[in-house]
Structures are given as structure tokens and as C-alpha cells.
Amino acid sequence: MNPSLSLTVFSLLYILTLACKTTGQSMQSEINEIEITGTVYWLEGNFMPGPGRNPEDLKGIPVSREIWIYEPTKIQETTGGMPLFQSIDSKLITKVTADDSGEFNLTLPEGTYSFFTKEDEGFFASTMDGDGHLGVFTFSKEGNREAHIKVDYNAAY
Image (tube, rainbow, N blue to C red; front, side):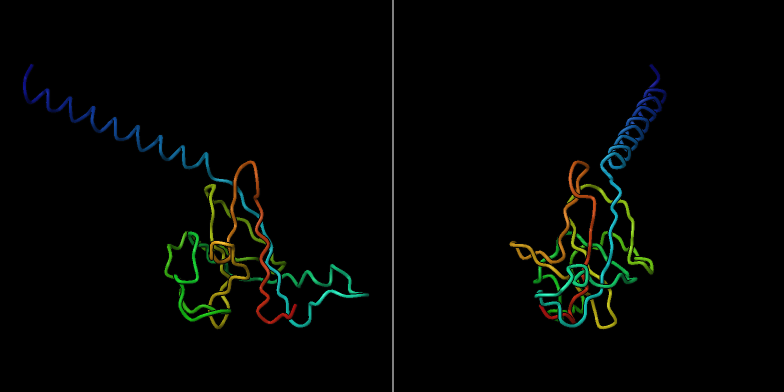
């Protein structure tokens, strides 16, 4: 066989192999992505439970906010201190904006993420897990597909 022809055939087979491998990875990524829904609530003032308090009153008011989604982030990966962080040093995955009724939708691969709302004075995450990750939500096809966020840095409990 002609060496030039052999090289051409080898090159074409190599390119086809790479194309098939890339397509397979892309399809696998799409298979693992799931639709996430959620709501953002603003809470301000006294939210102490007590006699005569309706639990619905403790839920908060739906608000529009920009939500920044990062890989799981610990407090050591932020600057500015609590409750409002000035910067986040982990990898930004995506951003989404909740509408005026506080609702948002996005598609993410299954996994664990840190959700921060963008406030005028910085970024806010309302929760911390036992490992020190801020604003953590874990999503899976068989499990959780919702993220309800409370922006409560002006609330008392």
C-alpha cells in the first residue's frame, strides 16, 4: 500500500474516532441534565414563630433576583464576610434570573451546587451545610429538582 494513502486513511479514521467520541460525550452530558425549578423569597423583620402566627406569613414575599450558581463553595472561598460576600472564588457554573413572582427554571447536570443571590451590596447565601458549603442544593433525576431560596439577611428568627 502506498505510504501516502496509508497516512490519509489513518488520518481519516482518527478524525472519525474523535468525532464519534465527542458526540458520545455530548449526548451523555445531555442525558444527565435535569430541569430545576425554584422560587426566591424576601424575608425582612420578625419571623419568630408564636401563637397567632400563620405559617404562611413566615414564608416571605416572592422577589426577582439574579441567582449565581457555583460549584460547591465553602466560606473560605469567599471574601467580604457574612452575610454579604464581595466575591466568590469557586467556579461559576451559570446565572439565572427569577421573574417578578420569584420563580426561575434552569437546566443543570445532576450534582451539587452553591446558589447565591446577587444583592446591591454583594452576594448572599442563606444556608450552610455541615461541611461548610454555602447555599447548597443537590439535584438528581430520582430526587430533588427544586431550589427554594430565602433571602433573609434582614430577618430575625
